[in-house]
Length: 196
Image (cartoon, rainbow, N blue to C red; front, side, top):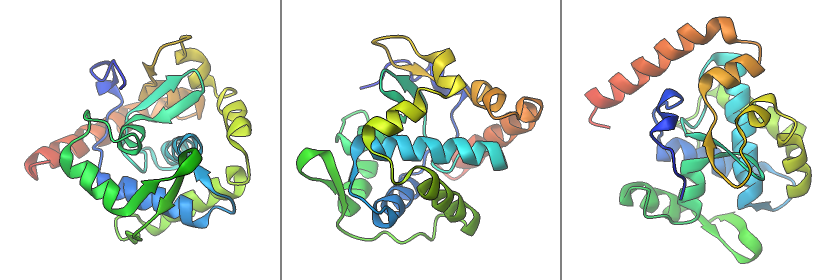
């Protein structure tokens, strides 16, 4: 669905479908209202952003993009949409745990647990739910349109990567960018060694 994945290499951490499913299920299960796909990709973007701000790396490892309706986690959106751009393994992990119903509402059909998430990451998800969990899709879009990195990266009618450097700058961690990039490189090397 999204173009420019090569452009997003500068942002890429290792995407793990299990972590993405667990973070998604956590939000869907703990939100006080039903969660649509648009709401989930916004809430997960906010969670990855907060994680970058507080610990220098995202929760999901997803590629982050600026679209007209605000920033998103792109691979998770591809999984929700059952896109052939995602691996069949990742699609099975997703569809075994989460399904989409009428009006794009997401449901957890099998609780994947949260053993892939640290206690701190769960605290970050709780913080996002306290701050944004009560908002409607329109309100989440409005909040997302206020983010400096979305404003800088957004191009009408296009999907453009939001680079780690833009988020680091927006959350006041620009001086930590070399360490964040080093952690990202280590994450990618470890995944290659593990065959991922």
